[in-house]
Amino acid sequence: MLIRDVLTLTQAQIFSPDSKSSLVEAVFDIDVQIGLSADLMSDVLLAESNRGLLVTGLINPQIIRTAEMSDIVAILLVRGKKPLTETCKLAQETGIPILGTKMSMFEACGRLHVAGLVSSFRQNS
Image (cartoon, rainbow, N blue to C red; front, side, top):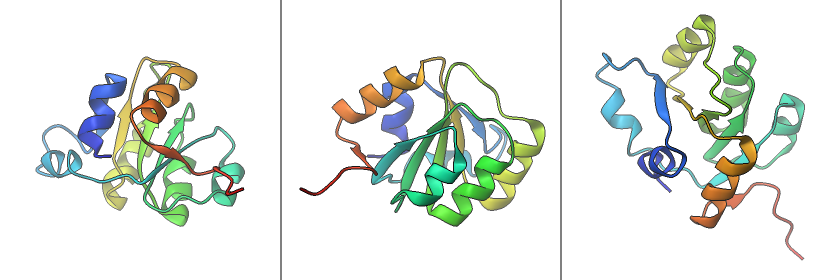
């Protein structure tokens, strides 16, 4: 799934990179393979997150640091939250886009799953 699809499905906006940045256009074509949602970054570190999209309600710089260590390629903030200035600055430096939606975590994840994004926690049984 491409970030352009995530933006459409969740009616999201891009917080980082800044709209004045030449990098904004490149964000639309980032491919995400799996989705994970968590507010505990320790849970994110335990999950398979290869080319993942992190859906979270956290807005602090720790989400970027965790994403860097976990091969998260984009972050979607839920419930209308806006990232802290420091978080956006760190996101710009690392190249990890931050998106935001007014939807609840439950609704955003549901829409992404129905559209075909698979869960990082899926068990093979």
